[in-house]
Structures are given as C-alpha cells and as structure tokens.
Image (cartoon, rainbow, N blue to C red; front, side, top):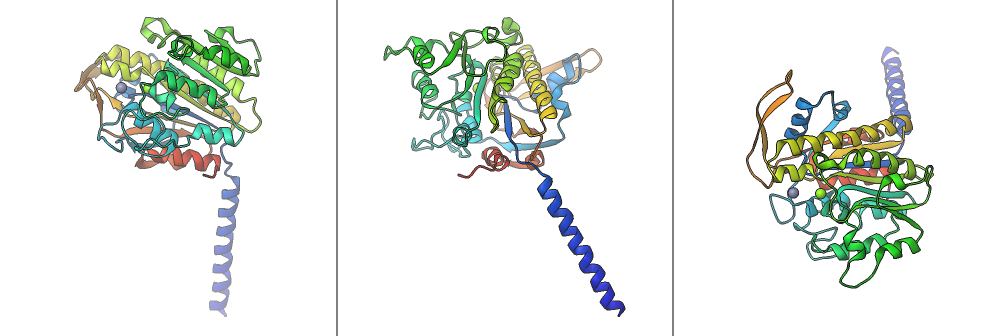
Length: 361
Ligand code: MG
Ligand code: ZN
C-alpha cells in the first residue's frame, strides 16, 4: 500500500513538473523585433578600455546573458568584415571580402531578407558608408566588398524600409550614369542628408545619406549621429505591427584599431555604447525586442598593460594594425537572450536570430 501511494505521489510530482515546464515554455514569447548592434573590431579589451575611461558606467554593463563567438572565415584564421558580416547575416562561413555569397559566389539569403519576406520592417544604420562591408553583408550579394556601385543597386532591389549612413557618392556619381537617388524617390523614399530633416512622426520609407563617403569619426565632429539615428530608426520601424529587424553598426572602432589610436577606439566604443543604451531603453519598455550586441572580429590585438580607475587613464598596447583571430563577446537582452550564452561559431548568431523570430528557412 505504501509503495502504491509512493508511486502515485511520484507520478503526481513528475506530472506537475511537466506542467510547470510547459507553462514556462508557453510564457516565453518569440521576439517580435531584433536589434543587432555590431561593433566592428570590438573585442573585450576595447570594451574594457571604454569602461575604464568613461565618466559613468557603460550601458553594455547591464547585460546578463553573455557568450563568445569564433570569428574565423571559410578561408582565413583572421576574418575580414565581409566574411564576418556574412556569418552574422546569413549563417555561413565564406571567403574574406565576400558579401552574403558562399565561396563560389552563390547568393545566400540574409536575416534582413528573411525579415522582409515575413513582412517585418527592416533597417540598417552605420557610422561608415552604408555600402561598406558590414551593412552591405545584410542586403547585397557580391564577391568583392569593394564593388560599391554594385552594392548600391541592392538598396533598390530589396525593399528595405530605412537606411542611414554615408556613401552618397555611389548613388549619384556612377559609371553606369544611373541616379539611384532619383530611383529611391520614385519608390517613395524620403531621401535626405541628415536625420534632422526627418519630419516628426514620419511613417514612410527613408534613406539618409549623411556623407559623400564615410561619416566623420566622433573625434572629428560626427556628434550624436549614431545614438540619434538609432532612436529615430527604432521609432519609425516600430510602427510596423509585425515587428522589425534593425542592424546598427559602430564601424569605426575597427578604424581606431587599424590606426593603433586608443583615443579613436575609446571614443568610438563609448559612442557605440550610447546607441546600445537607446536600444535597451526601447527593449525594456517594449518587452518583445531581442537586443544583441557583438562584433565581427577584434582589431589591433589591443592589450591594457596598466591603468588607473580613479584617474580614468589606461596604458594601451596594440600588437598589430590588422584584425586578430580571438573570440569576440556577444551580449543579449530580451526574449531568447539566454540562448546566447556559451561559446559558438559566429554563424550561430544568425541561427539564434532565426529561432528567436521563429522564421523557417
Ligand atoms: Mg564595418
Ligand atoms: Zn578592419
């Protein structure tokens, strides 16, 4: 009898566990929106250099779900931003310099294109030219990242809702004499040079080409373009009832590393962190937005050999003026954020976004 009762109790316990588990699973919402923030060249040292010298704690310090990804490409131990961006945007490792194609040149569908197909709003924001490797990896399909004029054509082939960045030159001064700004206007885009020209409560499509080539660095007067563009982009894209996908790039952390210039690296990382703050602010209120912060690779082999936290100074050493092969961190907040813990391939970031969106390939 006692044994029989014990079995009944055990069965009850097992079943209620299952019930609790099922309830938890049901409670987990899928991500309605994803904001992916890519700090080009931003490794752990770049982040800690900014943390050590900033006047207040960084927004990035709020994340609880943190992992690392391996950045090597299909062809090189040291990736470039083409292969690095393509891994994040399409889930495949490809050749250095390749933009959302496999190593044979076949186009691979990007998360932005999947989002569009699923009727989400889509956007790209960058502090470089919008045609540069990282943003290009989300929208274009070319074997060479330097084919800027060809990359510009993809901004008309994909029905992207908004983009903000430099690169105006290749829209208007082209070998084929096409004027892509006229084409954008014909497709109902509001085209402007500055985010300050966007009317209040603007709802339509938007192309902000804020520089002829790249935007200036923060130290050379870019101002709050990145955090302000992030806020504007979220405001506009979140009007879509089905949700949105937005990629924000802090492009010039990488260029500071190439220049072995710690002030350049730190100022760009702190500026990028302000954009992270805008994304987190929205995600906390919204409750259905997954925010992911990562890099494509580290740049400069940066080490901090000394520092003073009170005086907010650091002694920085760069071991190279190129990219390095080290793992880079991933930070996540929102629905499915716990899925980003651990060590995995850069391509898994794409897979995890697909799962969070519940998209089918
Ligand atoms: Mg880049
Ligand atoms: Zn680089």
